Image (cartoon, rainbow, N blue to C red; front, side):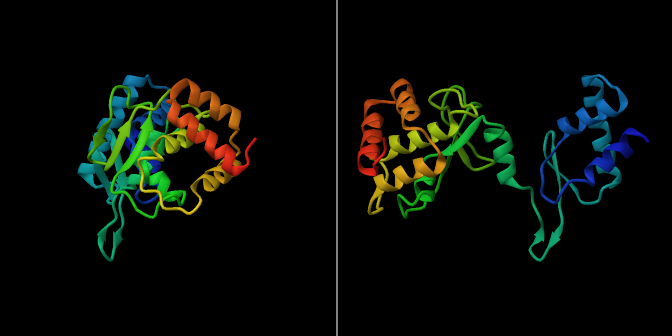
Length: 217
């Protein structure tokens, strides 16, 4: 089986709209044929060009360098790439970021006003807040490095940090927040420790009010 045949077979395993990263394909090619990393990357690049030129996979589409996807015809035209998956792969997975900002307050039922902008706190935003115009999201550095063991806590503390700036119109916001702590399995002591180390006094006071009005211990 040639490199092109191998890659074509891999492509046909993807679902419509799912991002296809040439780097991932190159890793599979290297494992199959015992190639070095650079050799596999070069061979993959050449193979994708040939596949596109020859229309060997007719529904394969180019999105940007290193990223392709399979489209399909719909009543509204060709299906595009799954941008939610792109956002997750680039900024959230695995355990490198989380959604934050006013959109989270809306999702939790703290406000009925749907924000126009989505915000993600991610380790990939190392210096400053910026907009990813292509994916339509604002990304910013987290208060501390996001890990699998602290991302839910940081996400919750971000909500507290925004609480007095947001148009909160829930009848009992602190009770809602306390219930979220219970449902998510968060520990008050851990939240307090992170708030003390990385957030301001206002956030600590908000957390105390959640504990008081929500009956947390």
